Structure formats: structure tokens, C-alpha cells
Length: 176
Image 1 (cartoon, rainbow, N blue to C red):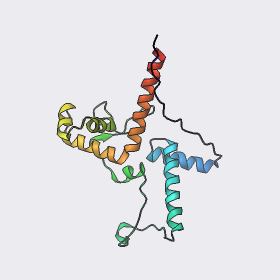
Image 2: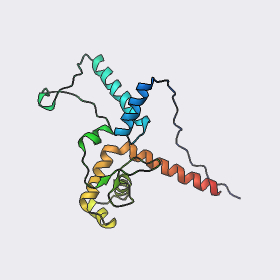
Image 3: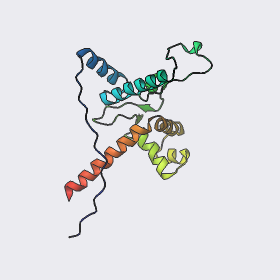
Image 4: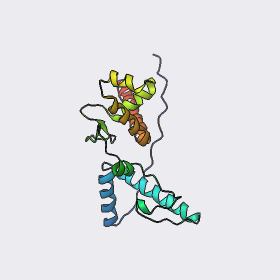
């Protein structure tokens, strides 16, 4: 009986265990719940990203300060923190959060369709937004919003895509 060629698997993520004081754990979980749909890994990644950005700015002799928008200097830098940015500046009209055991991306309102899945389908099929709106029977504005969401959350969408692929491969392996 011929054997199927093995499919290369994505590298496993490594675990890091740390001891935290209770107040740090509470603050981390609160941050995760508020901005990252309860996923502490994403909250810790964002915190470490901000720390690295701050340390690098200070290493370069820059000052890191917080000012209101009307007090911004002519030239400035600011970190972009995926997850938090969407909570602070995005008021989606066609996208909603939906509880799911492991998916964290937003969904098309009134549909069982993740925004990233829609946008990736458009990308893969090389469809113009108007065709996608017709194919999925959606308002054009919903399609455009899903594409903007993908632009802001590509890493999350691709990670969930990989998880789906791994689950499908495991299901095929289980049948073999």
C-alpha cells in the first residue's frame, strides 16, 4: 500500500513559565480580557513589544513621554500595539466579536463567517471587492471593512488559518 507523503508541520511554540506576584497576574489577565479576548499570551507579547520599543528609543537618546493629541510635537514616534489599537480607534460597523473556543478574530455581523476568512478568500481568489460582495451576498461596505480588518490583524488571521490547516491534517491522519 503506498504511503502518503508527509506534510511539513509548523514548528511548535515554546512555553515559558514565570512566577508572578498576584497583582501582576491580575493586571495581566485584566489587560488580556479587555484588549485581547482573554488571551494572556497576546497581552504579554504586546507588553514586551512596548517595553522593547521603549528601551530602544531610550538607547537612542530619545525621550518617551505621553501628551495629549493637541500637544504633539511636529515630529514624533509612537508604538503600534495590535489588539489595543483596534479597541481604541476602531468602531466597526459590520464586524463583531463572537465567543469561540480558540478563534479571536472578529466576525461578519449576522453571518457565520470570520472577517479574516472573508478577506483572505478575496485575496487568494484575486477578486475585486464588488465580486466578493456578490459572491457572499454582503454589502460592499462589509467586504471593505473585512479587508481593512485583515490589514490591521494579518498575523492573527494567518495564525488562525494555520490552526485550521493543522486541525484538518490531524483529522486526515486520524482517518488513515
